[in-house]
Amino acid sequence: MDQSTASDTRGAQLLDHLRREIRRRRPGERLPSTRALVEQHRVSPVTVSRSLAALSSEGLIVTRPGAGSYVAGPGAGTVERPPADYSWQTVMLGTRPVDTGGLAQVMRAGEDDEGMSLALGYLHPSLVPTKALAGALARAGRLPDAWDRPPPGGLHGLRAWFARSAGAGIDPNDVIVTPGGQGSISTVLRGMLSGGDALLVESPTYPGAVAVARMAGIRVVPVPTDRDGLIPELLAEAFARTGARAVYCQPTFHNPTGSVLPPERRRAVLEVAAAAGAFVVEDDFARWLGHGTPVPPPLVTDDVEGRVVSITSLTKTIAPSLRIGAIIARGPIAARLRAMRVVDDMFVSRPLQQATVELVSGPAWPRHLRQLQAALAGRQRALSRALATTLPAVRVGWLPAGGMHLWVRLPDGVDDATLAETAARRGVLVGAGRPFFPAEPLGAYLRLTFSGVATEADLAEAVSRLALAAPELTSGPDRVS
Image (tube, rainbow, N blue to C red; front, side, top):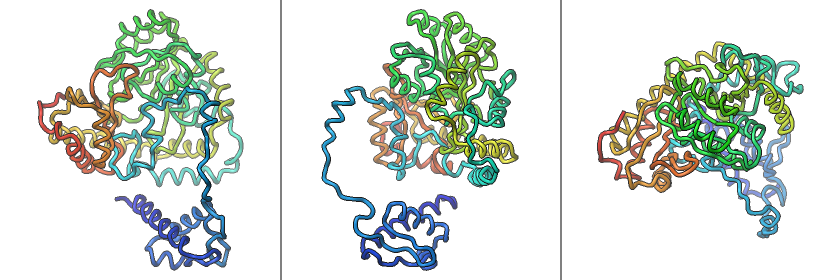
């Protein structure tokens, strides 16, 4: 356990202890001093201060500077209320649900922390550049204009950095800063298509994009893929059959398969889209997640017609709460997307943008990328070895050259959703493959993420727990690699 994780654990234990103390004490009774709590629980004064601040925000204590902290009076904190009847809301809202698809794991964040996670596609705290982030945020907060309103499209320095990172031919004015990749997908799909329109997507694909489309009433049409990604001939047939005006794809380290669109297919996809008069929505979320080999430039650098709208994000590469992404677009679609960003939420927080500039412009950024990419490559190898040794019936099609997932095929007769539920009870969270298919799944799959645990040894332990949940996977033919 690293230092920050241990500190978080001790802080949670202190909070639990203080809540029990508050329940035992009378209103107005003084709690132990900060010094006493530090000595008794072996925590830092900062941890005590954070715990007391949390209790104060909940209305459970009253803090008096120089005097201490006291149990709040009657009625403070959570108020017991009789059960309410909200059935009228069902009538007013109608029957259209919000389909979160494969994002359900994100909605449960914090509830499943006891289990080892091979499901959620974010970095474990041990892989996050916490010190560099803290320093960048502190420097950003000291700037004279730290809390001023930023330009709606984003700070020029950040837009310029995204443009340089994308490659030749991209101008800072082509870039719109967004609150992360998911927000970018929502803006682009809603700005490009209307309810009832068709959107072509890879099958399998990222469930979050499908969820956005369906919430907007957009009809999702799957296009088959293989090891090299989208199949241009089938893409052309889908455009002709549906009259779709856009295709959503992930050409580099595709989620969930890890495929990379080769040069000849990159050209073919753009040609097919041009023949159909359609947009290409490029989700370039994994730009900085290569495992040491060169990463191809984004599709948008091959585009001279404004046909490609490219989405990227730093969230996967830096930290889950660094909700900073970008849209690269040109022409009338860019003007529409800028206007939509203003209508949706005005702009992205200036301190967060400036902290990102501080981080990616300094020496900590290349150092973090080197360390992260080496760690991801090692974890991928460790997970692959653990699967081969412990779960030989699981079939890994190939080892991607980047990203944070392995896409594995289960034997016929094994239900991926049932297996995921059983594994959770054994203390390991895995991603069932079914939500990644916009239509009928082609078989039973799991997406196994290797970035969400502390060490390579934890990956082996997680696979061992998976074996306990599915003993039928512990014997079988050798996997294909």
